[in-house]
Image (tube, rainbow, N blue to C red; front, side, top):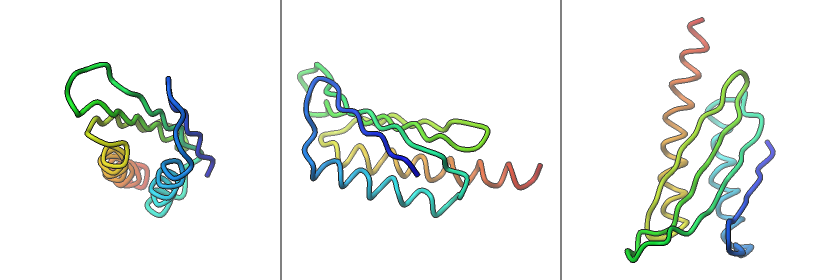
Length: 99
């Protein structure tokens, strides 16, 4: 699976990129039709500490799954987004299996 990480208006460090790749790679365990993944990291211009946004677009055969989460750190928002995509993948896999 190809994983493309883009950080918008800042430079993500190697440690963060490795963390994201490790988490996203685990999604292929739930459905083998995952083609590729695009991850966008953004900083929201707000005064709150919950200003780290992770958007993940998962390309699967015949469809795209998407999750956008915001929290205090990129690691936390990535965890939440990956969990949301895991649930979406399981539902999608069952839907494909029924048809």
